[in-house]
Amino acid sequence: MHRQASTAIAVEASPSRALSGSPEILRTEALRKTFHSGSQEIVPLNGIDLHVERGEMIAIVGPSGAGKSTLLHLLAALDTPTSGEVYFARNSLRSLREAELAEYRNRAVGFVWQRHHLLPDFTAAENVAMPLLVRGKAHGQAIRVAEDWLGEVGLAGRAGQRAGELSGGEQQRVAIARALVNQPSLLLADEPTGDLDERSAEAIFELMQRLHRSHQLTSILATHNLSLARRTDRALLLEHGKLAPAGGAKPQGERG
Ligand SMILES: Nc1ncnc2c1ncn2[C@@H]1O[C@H](COP(=O)(O)OP(=O)(O)O)[C@@H](O)[C@H]1O
Ligand SMILES: [Mg+2]
Image 1 (cartoon, rainbow, N blue to C red):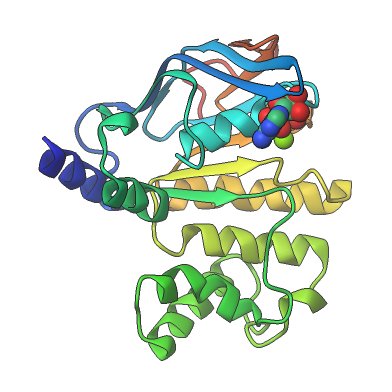
Image 2 (cartoon, rainbow, N blue to C red):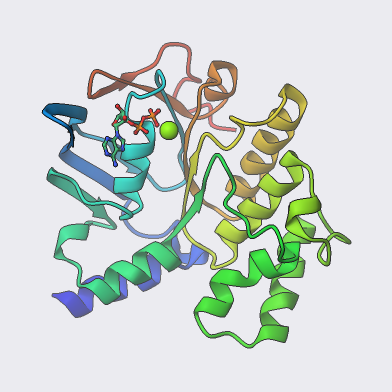
């Protein structure tokens, strides 16, 4: 059972395989998350049933504090639900052992935060290479792979620059490269354009769309930006603990 789950995750982590087999990549069942703040109980997620097919690009919209980050953290196995299940490639994350969960977090999922969480004193290439170095890849090799990714996100030639010296938009490009360097099949982005001006936000969204297609990703982004959300395959509104279709998304079958 555990061996099978681990194999499934290894297979799913390879984008070339991501389009084969079952269309379902991610599913949640009655997902619930509560927090306690003093005597108060906060219920940001109160029965989330989400079904995601391979290759979809989905936007999660909703007011601040609605639970968008909480949901993405549960999908990424960065936090555990109070109740309910997350299935990746039909494996319940709850059934995975710690080593398999680590593999899921590091190989199957790429995560982009609103505030990029780069190490400002390290170079752009070192930041992108970090997930490879953590896995034990040789430094020189890791840096070469990172430089290729920096080229893909439009930062060729900036590899040796300290991350702290880059603009907000450039830092977010580095963060996207870092999220993809292990070639995940699932890209989760938490308000990736939330801290950027309109022009940089547009450029980052276009970059994510391009990478989504060229690397056959399944992408889920939380965003406040309704006009960007409408340009995904499906926009979902998270409110009062529930997910519902948000108005104005591109109809199914018109995926670009
Ligand atoms: N670790 C935590 N402890 C207590 N409350 C939390 C924690 N994380 C989030 N919350 C609360 O859960 C709710 C949802 O937060 P969040 O998922 O960050 O919303 P969003 O990303 O949509 O702005 C908020 O009320 C927030 O204060
Ligand atoms: Mg948030």
